[in-house]
Structure formats: C-alpha cells, structure tokens
Image (cartoon, rainbow, N blue to C red; front, top):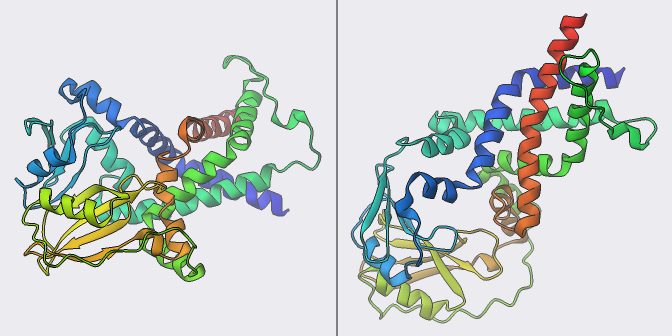
Length: 349
C-alpha cells in the first residue's frame, strides 16, 4: 500500500515538474560550456594569450561600480560586470572586445532562466521550492521502483520502435533504468542546485552542525600593512601577493562598501571554489585592514563552499564532468519518457 502511495506522489510530481526539469537540465548542461558558446558566438573572445593581473588591474581602475573577474584558463579575458548588469570583455592591452547587456543574447537568457527563471529574486524562491519537490520526486521514484528480488533484468531495456505496441514497455524501461543508473549524478545535481538557492541557510546550518576547525597547514598571517598605500588595483594586488603569496586573486568588487573599503576574493591552491572564498579588505586610503582565510573557517563552512563547484563540475576533472553531463541528459530523458509513458498508457486504457 505504501509503495502505491509513493507511486502516486511520483506520478503527479513528475507530471507537474516535467517541463521545468527539462528546461533547467537543458540550460544547465549547455552552460557547462558557457565559455565555448560565447567564443562560438563572439569570435573576438578567442584570445590566445591570457592577460596578466597587472593588465587586468589597469582595466579595473576604469570602473567604480560592479565587480570583475581576473583572467584564468577557462576565461581567457578580462571580464567586468558594471552596476547596470552589462558585461564587458577586454584583452591584455585594455581594448574592449565586447559589451553584453543583461538579456542581450541567448546565452544571457539561459543563465537568467537557469538561475532565476527570468523572475529575479522571486524566481530564486520558486527555484528553491521546485528543487525541494524534485528531490521528493526522486525519492518517491526510487522507493516505488525498489525491486523485491534483484537480478540483471531489473535494469534491462528492450528497444522497440515507437509505432509498435510494445513501445510503451520500452518507455517504462528507459525511464526506470536511466533513473537508477544515473541516480548519483542526478541526486548531486538536484541537491547542490537546491542548496545554491538556499546558500545562506545551508552555510549557517552546516557551520552550526560542524563547528570544529580542520587542522591545516595554514601559513601564519603576517601583520597587516597599514603603512602601505594602495590607491589602485595594481597596488592592491601587489600587497595581496606580499601578504598572501600562496593565494591568487580571482574576483574584485569595484564599488566601495558603505565604510569606503574595497574587497577582493582569493583562491588557494587546494580550494575547489573557482572564485575563491578568502577575502582581503582595503581601506579607502589604501591600507590593508582585514584578512579572512577560508582555511581558518569551520568544517561546515568549508563543506558548504564545495556545493557550487560540484554543481558546475569545477572539480573532479573529466570523470566528474562526464558524470554531470550524463546526469543532465538523464534529467531531460526522465520527464520525457515518464510523460510519454503516462500518455500512452492512458490512451491505451
């Protein structure tokens, strides 16, 4: 009886979430190759030589709002997002290669849909709710399917052409087997995607659950350098290299905080997060006033910073990227075969 109940939950949730799941899986899978898609649409972004941090700093000095990314291998350009949401791309000489206004091309539409359903903060809340429902959908499907007796036949698929009568069995077998075989990447993608929507709560919850510090070989921080002025980003990067030579600047905030301070994010060699989660803060007059090393944070906080890299396959090399791709394809196949099976079965009855 309880298996039947889980089956009904799985069916109605699947029918309700099918279109959303296909579109989110499709956009997410394509965005794994965002750099390649941008370079395909805008050939001027195919830079051979990666700009240096000094060259990036010269560009950052021209902006006083928004944020910017330093060049790296998977983004071989200087990228600045201004206060209006327009993204600018520059080469090492400081020449503007491209200006992409928000929702100005199909890649930007995909990003906004995948993140916020094109509804800004409301879309983020909706995405979080749909993510939780999708996790319930997967749990209900696994419970409903779980075989009483295991054998290789529980995952077999007999392929029949759509025009034949037995095609309905093929749909069911495809739906079942793809869900089970790719259960791990599917579960990781749905879990991490939902956690990203509730990032603040996840960070706080894990920090409280695992407050202990991880013993790491964190270098002693030298004294801050209040006597050193840093009126521009070149000087701030020089101070960062002197203070934390083992960390690499990845992202800077171009607009000062309410206190008039400037911030940058840095990444250490063993860190998963591509933008880093260590912070340096510079006062408006240029002195380094605070440093926050992610390696000195609690175990729970450090675990929470692994959610985003797992979701976008920023770690794990080609093996995890392949698993994420297969998981994304499975998340498209599952609702398609499920709805098709439901419709054919209903028509047959």
